[in-house]
Length: 395
Image 1 (cartoon, one colour):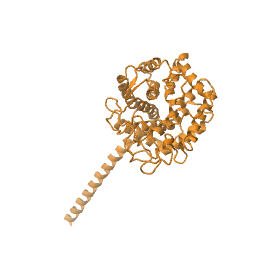
Image 2 (spheres, one colour):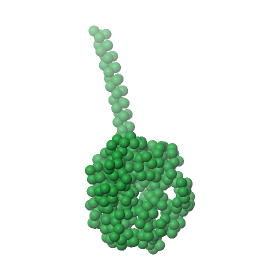
Image 3 (tube, helix red, strand yellow):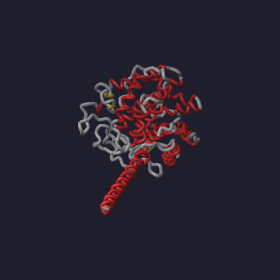
Image 4 (tube, rainbow, N blue to C red):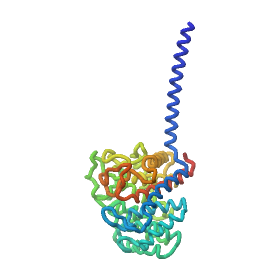
């Protein structure tokens, strides 16, 4: 009997020990899960933004020199202009004079003008005007805003509305119209922006570049159905949709609550947010093809950064549900920081220029893309909103 009790007691202790080990494992697993679903401190977020930006500024000490890849291009093209969008957001968080001076030197080098002149209708060439206006608002010297106003006024006074035939154009140019409408308190800028936007959304291609069923955008008419991905799905390029999501984010952040057509942008922003969140990868990133994860699948930073930017902004503004969207933002930011940011600030997993999943492949941790600037801009934009989100004590 005594031996029996001992045997049963040993069995009990064995079971208890296994349960304890199992529970400890569960606790560790839950701890890791909790950690991955928490935002870093604001100081850590700012540190990553500073690191990546410092890497770039050191690589390009003279902001006015041309960019040479497959050919020579001026440094006020869209790729560099998107970087300065992010730099201005970093400057808003951390007002270091060197950031401001770097942006002003860039604009001065180009005489606050554009690659194709002050009458250009090309959204890519106009993109630098976003930063020109921001710098004007800091120091309102007339020469800082005159060229971009002349450029956009040329479009406002025209009956042509089909300029934005590729969805990237929305991010490049829409915020300029929004900014000028606010600066000059002139709804004509808002109206023209809406006309151009709606032509892209409902008329370019077959029936517009926005699919109201999937709530995502085809990059241009070349990807309208019957074009399909290898798995039979429509082709929704990650960064292309990131451009639109960023455009809507920036426009909504700029225009007043009572601005005409605000509800259109807000509705589409919410529709896109839900569609984007639904296809996020488990590691926090998005694939280059949103509906075909096997078509050049894998981590990709540029689209991921734009999606993070928009979702974090939506939460900060009370537009998107914190309960529904915060986990996606946290996974995305932590994934980018842990998997993409090199110790020296270089960003990995960046798809170079293009318009579809197959372009600029392979996308890897160590491969240097043909242009590093626009993805850094997207990362800084994302960081600026995640920084504010972390300050809300929402972890």
